[in-house]
Image (cartoon, rainbow, N blue to C red; front, side, top):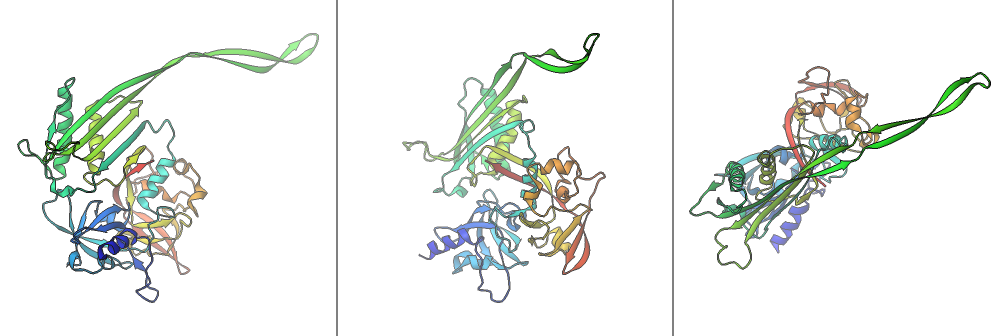
Length: 438
């Protein structure tokens, strides 16, 4: 019963407000969802909110929390209450990670922002939202779908070695090349290949192809009114019909698919069904032609990103890019007033506080709320709009768009606090965000 109670607490502890601290003290959260293990020895992180203090500190879905402030989780009656704390403080967690040789400690800040994914948003997710809202069909040349699954009943930490099952008779050399790329990624996750005694057997299928769509020539007829002089009628308006032909063209779309299955090597021989413990498939269509080996580097990066624990099973698109991190959180309905500051972040170190009102950033104002900007916020920023203060998010991006006319390394925040105007200088950090988009 104790474990069931803790599971419920762990699942929602980021979305509730606790008043047990008394007074007006705000309770802070680190930004994860977690569940107590069946044996009560650790908390398993099932989800990590992007841009949260936990995410910024490097925690990942699938990590296991064994100690909180040097106290074993197994010895705590309510481990969740030890993770919660006063907003603006930090908590020390001892973590075990898949593929890591030893436990390691992480200090994670606490903020009082509710992680509801609706109203409150981190800088990384805001940059993603701004950029993807600026996509057009032409700009989104890669259309992809991804499906990932893992067996929740398995202890994935026990799988430390792997080997490949070569099955492609039509193109065995390409298959070997793809497996070599995959092996490089798995090795980075701390696994090792073992031909003699693998824990996992990996099977791969792949496909490449193309589709041609021919658009025939089109005759375009237009009518214009032209003034013509006639000796009898004088100047009169006469309709003139013109005809032009738009040449036909062929559009080529290239298709790529890679699917993986990870099987428990010890159970294959006596199992009636394939003992699949993890599976993934990515399909991509593009107007750009690229070799399968070239595609595989990106695909395997996406696969391993959610191996062995899958937290986003399906997506139609995926996005990854760099943004400028200061540690601020925003309310999409009130963008000018800071909703949260992550402890130890560049903004926190500079002295910016929750509740400060941003007057401008490097001379550019912020819109009052996200809906004021409209769907083309990215384009409006590119045209140097007056209310485009969020251009700072793209200082470190790998986009053609450059937010400032000159290279800028320091941001100047004009702040209003309690009726007093203040100035802060902040040096943002280069951070990477990855997201699955449906």
